[in-house]
Figure 1 (cartoon, rainbow, N blue to C red):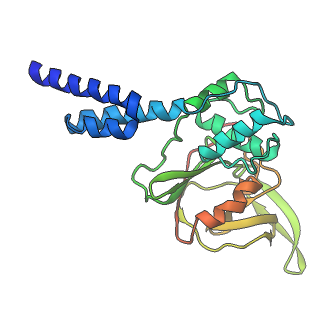
Figure 2: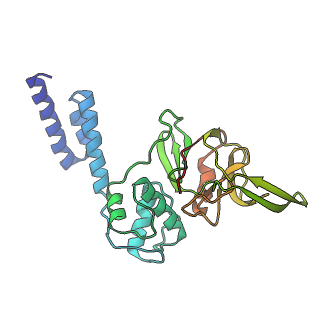
Length: 270
């Protein structure tokens, strides 16, 4: 690029930054549109990200399960804004909020813990996006990251929901259960297979399977489903299904139709 061109681009970017501070991102986009397209888009994108991050100011107070009050409500509101589904924004730090905190921490490279301290608060001021597992995937799809124990729902190319999960434990089992009126023995490897699938049939409310109760199950690979469970620990613990926190299982059926691509990737290392 010649000197004159570089000076011209610099002048336009400086003008755009000045207007951004006084009139917002929209005005900055209008000004930088006169610059070369690649430079203008990159500068506005970075500026918009800085503005978005600066809108949230973390209270900084350390919170633990059982905490109540305004700071908990701030935490819940921020988690909901970012797509983590903490349940009711009621100022009470319970299990629903905890599962959302875990999901947020995992996406942001923080070892999951029930304590919300400075590192988690700081990350909420400049949050990361979840890792895309299938860059060329359909705009509306579900990605399951077994390594991170995370589910991400994309709708029209945008992150709609991020959830903590518990997938198949990988521990072989044999269990006896009463099924179809008689006692039967079932064995398996408790694995959630990786691969590409699509959502199929579903049930509302509690659905009894031969290995237990599933809440609002959405099946995507034979008898393997996304479903709500009362226990969704940090480590994989299911027979093969993808367990969801109950508040996530309440809303997922309304967000995911039949035939939606499901991509399962990774491997959890204990």
